[in-house]
Length: 112
Length: 114
Image (cartoon, rainbow over all chains, first blue to last red; front, side):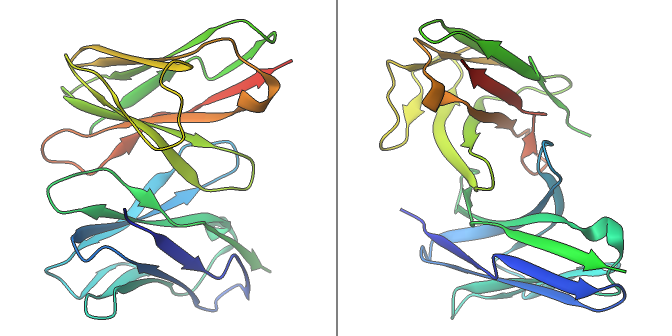
């Protein structure tokens, strides 16, 4: 089955700096890669996603890049703000399915 | 957008009792729903895939007789934790997808077994 690894497990940045979270996946059949933000005790919220036919996608301060050959994808948050502080999860899903395998999560802390 | 409602949001039960958690897709039909479990400070682990009108598919290591899943309609899936024990205390989250939107999660259920 799919295995998704995520790094780093914790990340502290100063407000205004950029944050980068990286994930690798094992199943070459995976073709959908969403990123979720989860605040304590709440549901994961989809913040951005990318499909395997695209190498990069951007939405305001958030961007995701995908390298299919190397089987890794990354989340980039620019101009970080305190409200960006949360746990971020990457995930991967196989072709034709929506069964997600999640990464282990990254606790992002944006300090003033 | 697609909305998934999960109930209850939290429940406390005594060891040995059973607890039912409901997951509803409010404005779309979901032939497939997924149940995840999340322990504190850990990732979401898929427990099972719930298929409308058929048996659920369980992930390796998940006891199907302990975690009963019923997907009786296109808008409702239920997870029943039978004979709950303290180690079953966790955050249970369902998810569902319509044909055009990405996966949507319910609000989750915090289960505490005393």
